[in-house]
Length: 100
Image (cartoon, rainbow, N blue to C red; front, top):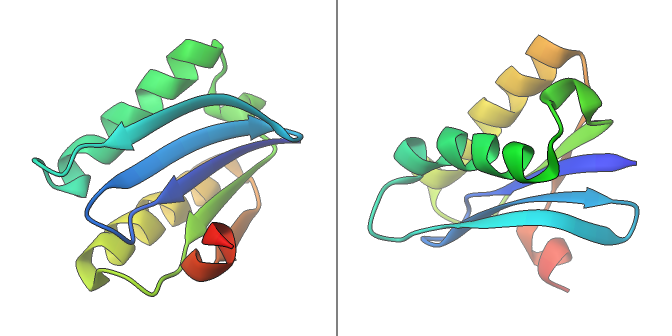
């Protein structure tokens, strides 16, 4: 299963694509810019690295916090928009569960 994962709960966010248990691509969102300026270009970048499109993904996952309220709103909004546009399922993951 190919999953696009988005985490914007902390000042240093991240985007990753995993296939099964294998990390295919990742991008760290630099703290010097806001997530809303870096998130979509970062998603484009890792999709180009894997030579996949959004349609090649099976699902999306997004961090739910705890964390930065604004960061979470950005990540969740973009993930919901991508899921709606592609018809892919979206899973919310508590940030602390992802870190454990």
